Length: 317
Image (tube, rainbow, N blue to C red; front, side, top):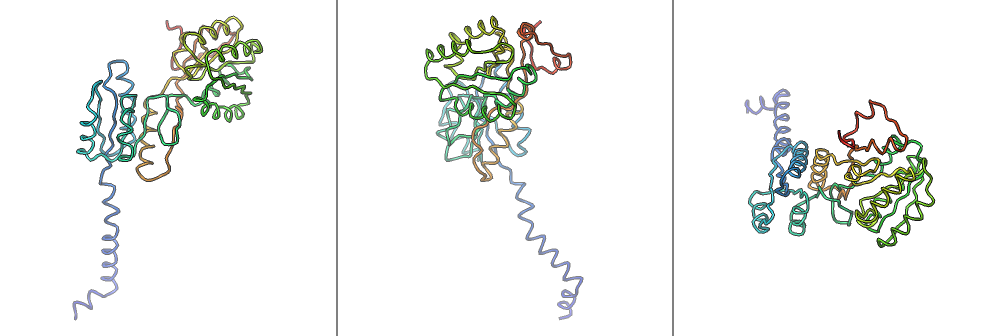
């Protein structure tokens, strides 16, 4: 009885309350220690592509504090072996990179939360990931810096690029730009419409934007025609495809692989924790590539400070 009285004394009772509180909170303290295992499926690729995937995985690793397992996929990988290995490794969530990783999404969908990257993804209502396609908001921001006199932008696109053009319309208003967007279906439609655009475009104040579209930015027919006409008419032309800068477009934006990896890790964690599906996001990189020869031809001069900020310049010395 005396022992019970001592236990129930005010000071002892306070100690018991603290003990019970610690027991109740113990699961909360232990929970973060149970690591969530993240699998990254990506192609086993030769240089320079290997460096791209390594940088993306480094970004993923930077954001994912728990267990991360890399699964490099050879050209002729065994689908069954990969799926069995995911199960044996007790994987909780998956990131796929490139076309080889993406080829497994039908097998992992429904079994693991997953997101995809290192591809020009377009929204389809079920997919989440970071697209290689540059956010038009970033493109228009750079246009305002590199060609502040430009006030009107022409773009041709097909249905597959419609989602990006819708984003561009919102961004153009915010940036004080007029966006003249025309949807076409075929290559011949695109050629005819570009001829109309070129006839109506004003040098100095108008620009042509080439989206990442296999029809309206066709490498064989459209690109050579626009490079020639834009040069002759002194029109600004910029592109969503970085390789076009080397060929004569004024500028484009290169992917930031580390940044993409970081965002992919955040997105798959959101899915794993039960949040709303993030969907497909455009690339928000600011790695600017500029063709200085084209800039000089257009009468543009950039300060040494601005030039040093460019990620890449062409022609290369």
